[in-house]
Image (tube, rainbow, N blue to C red; front, top):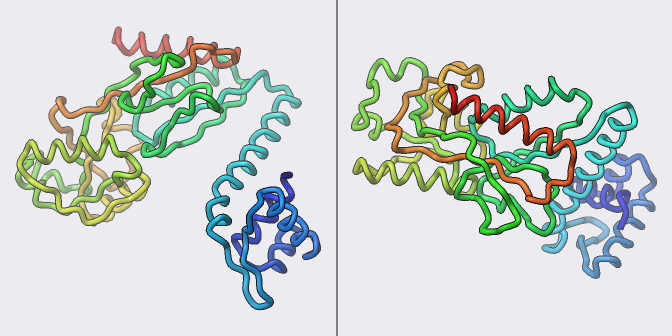
Length: 300
């Protein structure tokens, strides 16, 4: 299995046309056909149903798409990291994080970038509904995640880094009408991050609603926070999201949004996790930065 086969497979899976895939990759159609045939032989399955008029993905082909994309993305990242190292970079750091509003990762990255400008930093946002850490094949140096997502393993260490308080997220000007009146807010249409995207947050929101004796009228659910914020800013509903207390007026909160804090008892603990066998020298430097930043926050 080589990258040209992967590129050909992804091109055909998107276009469902061998001629268009060949044009997209800048190669003859016969090359695309050979790559697909060779890949199918190596995998031992058919990836496409092919007739003279039609090309369709098989179930095996559809299943292979995200893995093929991951292979291609990893190769591109690796090539870029090698290029950066060749041009003078002094190392590489790989971080996975859930897309929350926590600012500590940004603060640590800012400190790290100033102290070690020659280290390449890769950041991947990972769905909160996915298993974030693979003990046997972990491509990341650090994971920023919710405490309840930590694996039950002695392989990893973890550090508390922040507590994210649940807040009402409202269209601009809305709070002047209802303030923080939960009875009034409970009657609004809710726009939430989906349970599949962030099951821990979803559970906390439902616990909050039950404790205040209402069931939210959910107008829509999205798999990313940006869609939730855009919908709220457009006045399509309100939401509940985790927001770090010192970021309530942060520039990451978009225009057209107001934040109304909920009781501090509704919060989610965030941690940074890493393997005990921390072998990457750049990762050890970053760990020192995070420890100092967390200590400074606690002292402040």
